[in-house]
Image 1 (cartoon, rainbow, N blue to C red):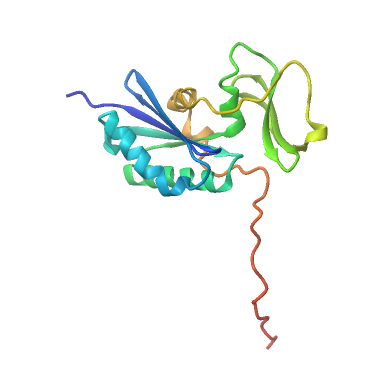
Image 2 (cartoon, rainbow, N blue to C red):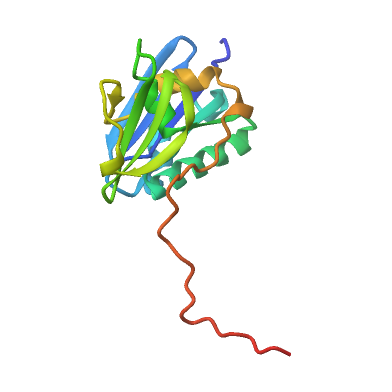
Length: 200
């Protein structure tokens, strides 16, 4: 039997868990609405998805994951999962920023801007000369400073199959799988019960 060559894409950056497989010439996907708790279910869903496509982890040749911005806990879950799989199977991991991934669905357009709700009356935004070709870095702006015009797009979700195809040919050295939060995490180190050391 011919060895299967499979790319897995994972997105947990929002209130969804999205998976896609490119298995030779066949592309399939799995989407589940998940408000929270991605970490608790991600490996279970991957294994069931693999079983339904009659593949195993040994068939993987690379993994694609969204790096953010997005849900802090969701991003941590998928990045940790891909790192574990990539390390165990010694295969490349492709980390794709959220806004770039959203741009993949804007076909046949040039010089446009992607906007993503960042909550707290703020938005993430980034401009592109065409899909997957960013102009500058992501920005975090207040809603009152949000760009406007005809070429502004606010996609609701990433197209997970487009992400898989993009990642299948991307260069690993160009897309490192490290968290891309843009906004800093809210969690702060606790100092209430720290006892100061006396100077000797």
